[in-house]
Amino acid sequence: MELKRVVTHEIVTNALSSQAMPSPQQQGSPAGRVLKPTLGTTYESQLRLEQRLLCAAPVNRCTGILCLFAAQAGAAKVIGIERSDVAQKAAKIAEENGFGDVISYIQGKVEEVELPVEKVDIIISEWMGYFLMFESMLDCVLFARDKWLRPGGQMFPDHARLYMAGIEDADYKEEKLGFWRHVRGFDLSPVAELAIGEPLSDIVDAATMVTESQCILQMDLREVTCAELDFSAPFALKVLRQDFVHALVSRELPRGGSSATSSSVSEKKPLSDQERMPPTASLLLIHYFLVLATVNLVITIPTANEYSERLGAGRLFAGLMIGCLPILGIAGNLVNQKLFSCLPLKTIWILNCLGTVLGCVLYALAGLMKFKWTLLIARGLMGFCSAFSLPGIYVSHTVGLKRRSEILFYFSAVLTLGCAVGPALAAMLEAFMKFIRIENLVLDSDTIPGWFMAVLYLLFTAKLILLLKDLPIDALAVEVQGRTLESLGEDR
Image 1 (cartoon, rainbow, N blue to C red):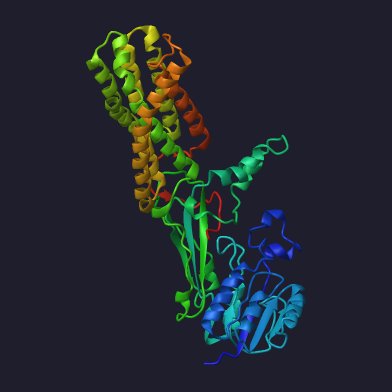
Image 2: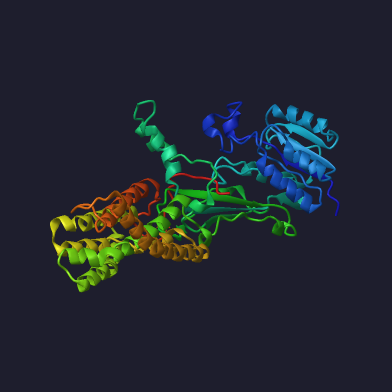
């Protein structure tokens, strides 16, 4: 079947009818994208795949790019409808590109103009607005469909779906809302209360998604009526991991062409939850911690007998001192699991690090105290605060299943590294003390491992505070339900 006539639907959103150019706040919105025919390139690909005489009708103002695509694909006639004076510029663009005899523009509203033909074969329009439907031009497209599309004609797109999902993006939230707390030295926080109710149009990083996508609206544009455009749709989102939900985002998926070509329109799915990864800084930090904790476990072993005997204890006491750390570490892990339900992971981690610092200092001061049980108390405190389970908890909530085996391999590697580095560091510290010839009750070859590890743990605590992306208190195991949007975004 040869398709002879094509109509394009080029109209301008209400936001543009009152101003010539979008404001800075509209950049990224449907109104702010009028100079960027990005979706048109997708239509161009579909036109080439169709190998038929198709036409497009973009909401984009200025260029008439989809009309050019349609003419380039071989349409015998392309009719563009443009309500503003831009129709004259678009006609000139068509002429300068060699399609002046194929493309013609009619200036006016879709509901008011008359076409030079009775029926058209295909109508394509980029009508999508905020949240797919808000400030969209779909009602105009449906009017054109009912008035001009021949029986059996095609719509492009012919289907549309709207998805909802929850995301975590503390930085973006702070950028958009926290900004109002400090504006040239003034606190404009009440403005943030207004801003939180306004939808935003932006690109969302797929890695920030913390819930599955839920389809809340499906439309067959060949059959839907204007009365069905006003919809209400309760929804429930399945949470994928422990995290905050800072915003709800929408994802619009128009599908174009006939059933024979709809399969060629691929949906860009977000990064699979099974492949998610935390920030690189956080990953490096937890691997550094595993090395540090393993070194702390074994660094005192070479000097344990000598230190114990110096305080009047025997070899049995030295073995008990060495073994109490991993044993009490099990008890500490159980306590950490309980604390995780009421405290953020970063807070728990910091408390454990500070407890380990205290244990290391006590270990170093045992010679000054001349009390052998100080060694056992110090090592026990180090074990209880060793926090070996926290890296595993962090990974289980931030690393997808497909990447988890990779991370566990690195875990094994750094644990082995720590076991090798610990005794080597002990030997180097002992050699250093002999070289500088310092021997007293506070600092000698027996106590320096304690001081050394206390300093390393203090440095790690500072890095932990600055670099680790925290996990929330709540497990988020329940479904998130609701219909009030904190902010909206476009997930691509």
